[in-house]
Image (cartoon, rainbow, N blue to C red; front, side):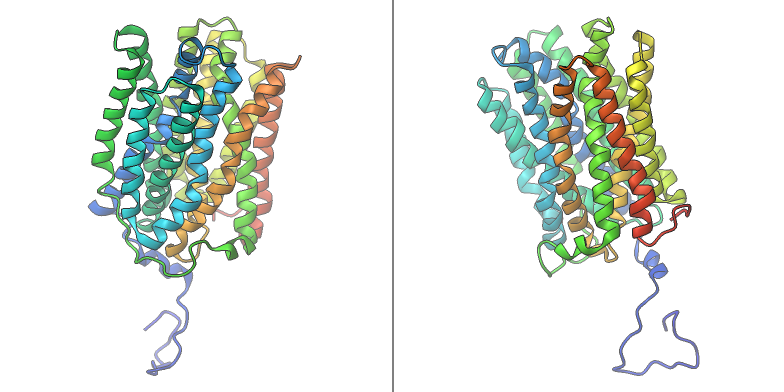
Length: 425
């Protein structure tokens, strides 16, 4: 007997079933157990190897500029780094629906391709080779691995979804600390050379993926309807959330790319400036976990909006940061608040579909649209840095668009999604 029935309403065979109240959806999620947490931890390993590896780009940028690609401009080399996250998020447009239709087995082919691109990168010499292998093919393979993994975790959690997704996304922070430090030390303090340094990273990532991918399994039977769900864009709450997220991510990426350059401009040594990226990624670990856990109590959309607003305000203050100590503190604070954007955005997108079978597709379509942000944000900021205003212009641009996106999520997309602005929903 459903909650909507009373003792005076006997069940009549063949009669239409009354829809269950949405609150009963919580009973369908395990909310824990070895299998559920195994999926979340496997997801963390995947983000360690994908999004965490993307965070190693600063090391490649510096190395290419004085070695294989020394005849190319720094902005041309930066396009390799911009294409990688663009194709990683854009591939989610395919990876998410594939997971909903065929389950977790879709992760295995792109895993093989991704590992292949890592080893091929170690022997690349020409600009177009790095563009094709590291930027395009590597980015697509990463997205086809990451999107299904991110879609699997929410199938096991509802009340604890924020905590589970926080753990899953936190893997990227560990990758963003370990991988660039390991790669930089091998390139600068050993005689391994570029080829074997990259191969060591490739072997490390291979080992982590061999352990992380098998535990990732779908809990819900595959969806047999359309591959994509265009009707989702008719839901104002979902569409407006994507619109706000686009601006949040548009302003989030530039500081990630340019904080080391800003440190050098402030008189910081190149060695110390390099470690700013590692400091930022280390601080993003609690930034991705703690706010995600709090989102289970204070609301998924609230947490994402708060992260956007806090990041926007902090970025606007960036132009006033002077001196080594201040730059280091800024990098740590920025790592924390921007880390909450990554976990908050994925949790918010995962919570939009009414049917758990659609989580992968909703997330994939949303991330596909947002993928344009990392593609255009850093180049726009690079053009602004070349103006007379320099980093001040970058600070104003990135801070303004991020602040706008966070406020839009709170004040517009939340009411359009049927929730009160001040509610903890």
